Amino acid sequence: MKTILAVDDSASVRHMVKITLGAAGYQVIEASDGRDGLTQAKANAVAMIVTDLNMPNMNGLEFIREVRKLPPYRGVPIVFLTTESDDGMKQQAKAAGATGWITKPFRQEQLLAAAKKFLG
Image 1 (cartoon, rainbow, N blue to C red):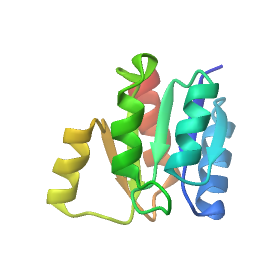
Image 2: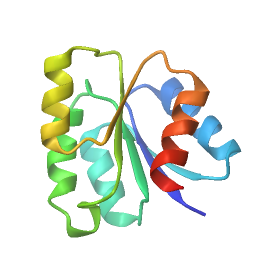
Image 3: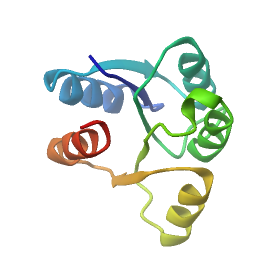
Image 4: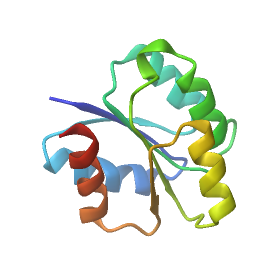
């Protein structure tokens, strides 16, 4: 079973991600912000990360930059799940190491399609 890390300061969004991906057979670990996400990433072997952009303590861009420094996470797919749709922000995210982008509010099919695309 592949494990996905969901990083979002909104408990309801994390819950939606967990229900959506859990129903498709993935195990989902939750983190409440980038700092918590980094701790979870170091403690668990994760096959994919879904992260918000705007969070307290450590935002999504900072989180991606930090996680990409960890050798096991150099090639792990990271998908932004955010209300942001600005092209400049998408470029920054890509430069930081994001592999995908889904705009909130998201449809469950979008998230499942991303998981299938990146995890097979």
